[in-house]
Length: 308
Picture (cartoon, rainbow, N blue to C red):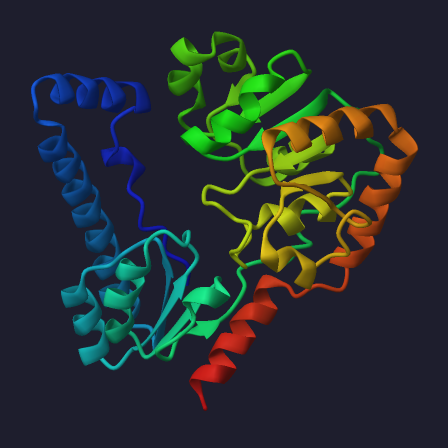
């Protein structure tokens, strides 16, 4: 059984939350307010997880981090006989959080090889759900470039120079964060969230799909799921380089990479102009994804590992 521990009913609208933090900062209370929001969300998350656990009494619990659960709740699950598995899929900037988390679990995995020590096993998050991501029979391009992902300062620094392009952005935070700093970019926001068939069609509607990690990715082996989702849709992927990509694709042949905003923009211009090369790369990327593991394959591996 899958449990989403995020309780969206208890979350403030992004705009209201941002302005409340701004006012708290002026009053010298920003840290106190941030702590309040964090405790509120953690309490809701743990409440939903405990309710689901007590109702279904599972034998195995897989916690995909960052959805942190309280150590007391994890101890309750373990006392009821459940085997606990943690899987760190967040960025590389929080190794202390990972180290504190490990003792609460029977097995622990991480998407970053450089953080795999003290019993932590490397397990990439990428996989291909072919029931959700698949090529279109006919493609009608509505955008030159699209990007999907939550706003952060690094990502905006990459997209700031693209407001003159036929660009589409999907992700929470973009409307409010760019409204003042880059109004032209704010006008490129399509939606705050997008899932399922709509997301697949959004990828397919673009000549180029961008992927920019939240963390500094050059030396990290972890990658976002978009690096497999996008090629599986038959779309051309232009992604920020990370060390783990070479384990998946033949770079610059099946997907293309960049390391700086300048290189990203140069490659966007090149592949928009050279359609045949762009489609050749997209086709090769699609073929590669046909042989990659599925989410079910990942779960089978975890369960097999747990039995040893």
